[in-house]
Image (tube, rainbow, N blue to C red):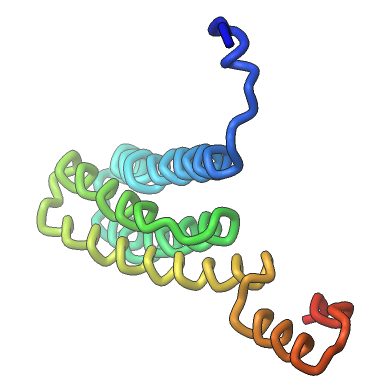
Length: 157
């Protein structure tokens, strides 16, 4: 029963812990892309285009909205629905508003969080369909069991 630290480090972790670590790693990737969209792109546009407000509005209305929906969608397709991803995407925008002096635009963080929720819900539906945990998949399985059929046709969608 005496185990040293090296033996504990080689022990197998549970599937839930591995899935949580995988989801957290994907969240890091989402936030790194968020740094690009929220911080670096407006900075470079301000630096090279002389602070043109039209370019900032284009980034704000188009690129960031596509990022918030798309990143939450992709994260949910890979890892299932995690409530903290859209919240992190929305909150991650607010410091950039203060850094660039556009405090009045900080409410867009709430819009990005709501768009992220829609992306997460949509991605979660695809995740359930991909993993076979969807409503219609279970309905087909129950119907096959009720009629005494084999489950060979259940996997066909």
